[in-house]
Length: 516
Image (tube, rainbow, N blue to C red; front, side, top):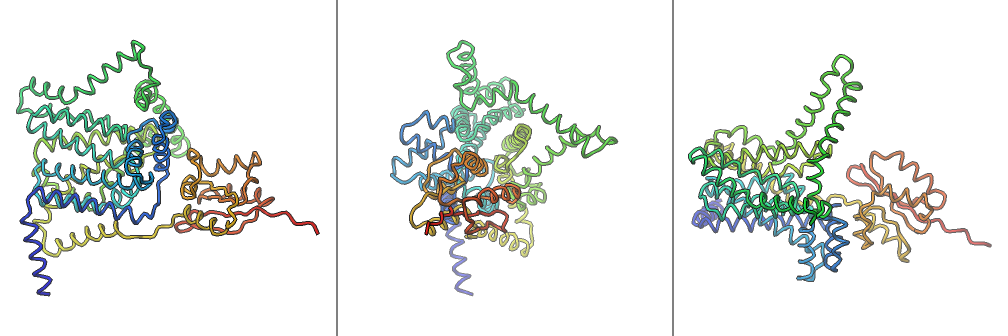
């Protein structure tokens, strides 16, 4: 025990002797190693969205810009994949994994600097790093997916850092760095455009004269103001057509017509709820019920995205709020309001809200949570301190643990390759399976639509083996497919996914009986 204690003491003294820049570098390296491990335990699994980016990157690498743009018009992330692929010679999948790790390290770097800029100490930075790396959803679930989200997190975090510096130091260069960072964040995820509103926080600084505050605010949004003016003039004059604006058309459509259509859609949902759920006596509350549900769903996802330890620390350690720099408090408050409003707008527009879309708010919750945890830890008894450290360490190791998740598409491909020794034609009905089997990309056509179309046109018999994916809520589809395939195919095997909620049916074409 004395050896262990002396080792701990020596390690602690060595860490304490490090300079701030070395602490930051150590956290960046640790974040990159965590990202590397999380990538490794995926064992090559890819998200469905990733396959779209891979295909766009493949087109870009071959100089097929029009084909790439027609598949996905927001090209920064696929362009990074294509560039990395061409420079290194690595396949696009491996390139995506390396870029994913690099972007997460860049995000962690900005995250550490943001904590320090907001008034935190090196201890605060390490608490923030531990909260981030132990986050079950952000690191445990999302980081392993090869998506453009990590680039969005990185650019948004650096944008917040530059804006906070601008608010504190009044250097014009920081204002432009903020705007360029938001532009890059937009090129990863379009919804980053809403964060151009953040310089309005400057108006709350009553220590400055109103004229000075307005001057600084205009500087903070000068690029989008000037760019928006130029684009508007070009559209009015006819130099540029709205159809040429890529995904910016979505914002224009939403402002012109889309929001009215969505409000009408919600009105219809409210009427339906009033008639079929609330009944005659309560149908006057149908609008309250539908809007209350959407707001509560958004709030629930926002509060949970950073993890329960962060949420509890924010509540229990709320007095730590005063330890944060007052400029940062104003900035973080507006960011949370804008993030929540954006999430609410997304759920209104799409009637779905993935927790990925609220991670922008989760980043600020992690930053503030670091201050709260540091505050609570300083006042906690020894048993509570040990319990907290064990909890966060356990969550971190859970993120790093190889849980050997069932990848049903990969299992199906491996099984079919093992039985199809003569390399006969195989129908892989999911995009993931086609990727693993090195088959052509089919624009992510849903499995059931592909199979149904082949059954209707009779081309299903062109294949000798079939992979038929069945979701847990498609019992009728399964029965219909089994009945129609029984004419020409034999069911030879069934593979099951996690908790048997999904399965894959393997069929082999029935060989005609040879004549005697």
